[in-house]
Length: 529
Image 1 (cartoon, one colour):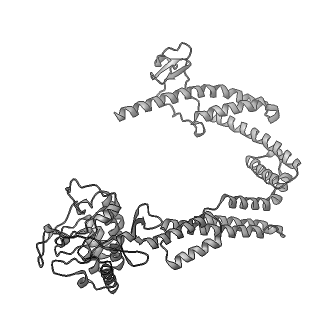
Image 2 (spheres, rainbow, N blue to C red):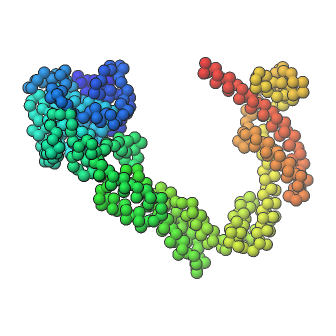
Image 3 (cartoon, rainbow, N blue to C red):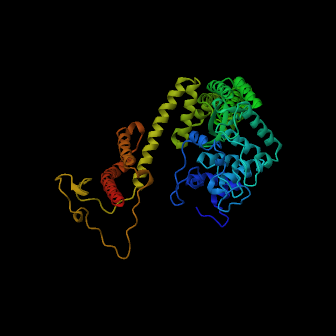
């Protein structure tokens, strides 16, 4: 990774200014490998990122039996000396500037907490000097020691200017003393993120958690004592059970309790509960409105009531509320109930069969469904169904004929019925099963004087040959029932003129599709080689 004269690079810059996305990107590319503890690679061949956060947390804890190990020998030559060979690290800058999310990313990547700058300051010195409490608390959860002295002889206490951080330092040392831990020995104490008390290693558990509800990776580090962690698990179990149920009041009470007590519920679980709470609230509101319009005295208010109900559903969907299907069913049932009486008889009284249009068939079907659901007399349903079916088939037959008539005519069709062999890539005579000379397959085309043949384009509806075949079969069925569908002689004659051409077109298209597929597979194999 390129560096400037001050030994700065992109990763240091991003850690310094707090650019989480850039740091995450660079770490994914291996940019942090040269800062890891025990790094033995080269800039051109860095080690891959560390994958085991649990072992990483232990290996990066600043705890040593030998006081000489508090600074790396190659980075310092003794008190009062400025080591120009040393360089600042991304982790040092993130600790000093107070970017806890970046600190966690770098720690997870395995970056070395023992690395010192030219003045002998390690990450603990930087975090204390920076005075950013959340960052210092993160290091206390990670597991550190506070006895380090820089090249100028300064301890973390002497570098501290923040009263709250000083309280943590004092409590840290008191806990070490109470547990009989020497400041220079390997053992240390860990800060519980929940109780804010220090505990011995045997009494804590560490976790990688999601930072936000939208996070895709677990990048937030947190340490909890067993007692507090068990409390969180109990609250999470209770919350999970409430999410499975539909008790809006109980869920709301629980979420308020969690917020008031600042319980460290896993962020995605908490978001799931909040989303479920809003879902329940919205569904109760919708069902209450449906109940309020069970009986509508004023006929003219029906449309207004429908609009209000539809607006409630649209608003819920716009807010991302995932309504249950039962709610949609209830809304639909309510709207159907409100509109059935208003619409059905109007359509039946005003529909003119001789001048029926396609949109009127659709409307008639909608009214018929409404009428059936809300117990309109059977005779109206039967008459509507017979008439609708007849009109639909009649209109469909005309639509198919229109499509066939508009289907472009080829200049020529093959003289020999053939099939395309996918194994050999050759055109074969269907009768003799022998290969056909391509030059003899089509009749000679007429010569053109200075004009190119117009481009032949398949209509959109017929791009799929199955659709073409289905259309032919359907039209034949309609012709077989011409009297029932009231298809006149002129229409039948026009159909009989088009069907043979469409059959020949379909058979040709099937073979051309095989040939195209063969050529595409051939190209793909060649490209792969």
